[in-house]
Length: 241
Ligand code: ADP
Ligand code: MG
Image (cartoon, rainbow, N blue to C red; front, side, top):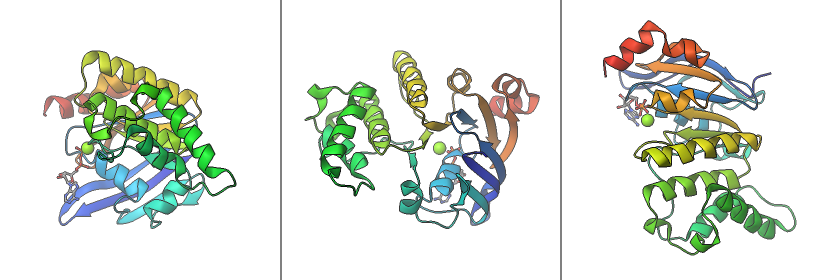
């Protein structure tokens, strides 16, 4: 059984069909890439999967066999589905550690939860390269790259089964992109299934086992990455932007 399954999912804004009849399956343990020109519906697809801030107009979404379309963002997150945002999102007035602790505390109710959350927050921050010297810095003072790392750490600290990453490489330098590729690969090695949106095809090529290309809200091509990027319709969609 696939971990995440979308069946004929759509979302419109007025007359604009932002996501239009999209179906695909993500297997547990894989990195699944989603590419597409700007405005093709990638971020909207993440929004409707996670229910943040809205679900789909129609279609079915199942996570580990449970129907999640129509559930609240909190209910979906508690099932083990976490996301990052295209724009760096953190609480600027809180420290690096406090931000990660918010993720780590999410949904924890067991005895000793506070101590376990502190440990998970510290571990996730070290994992992304924000070592203990950074713990007391304000999130608002971090560089773009550090903020992306913090957003990833906060999501990892939630100990999700699946992580949705929206354009983690945008506005990064070449060396930072290389670091990000390694980090995402190691995140997958922790056993977290990854759905990865990226505008830059080369980034997806080196990471994903399956690739899907969106255009105008519809699936243009999907399958094994090398054959998808060789598809004439994909080449045309990218040349046209
Ligand atoms: P991508 O992430 O692929 O660049 P988006 O999913 O952000 O694309 O946007 C797809 C289309 O939906 C765009 O035309 C965008 O302007 C539109 N759109 C996205 N979110 C909203 C919204 N909340 N209200 C109205 N239109 C939206
Ligand atoms: Mg987007």
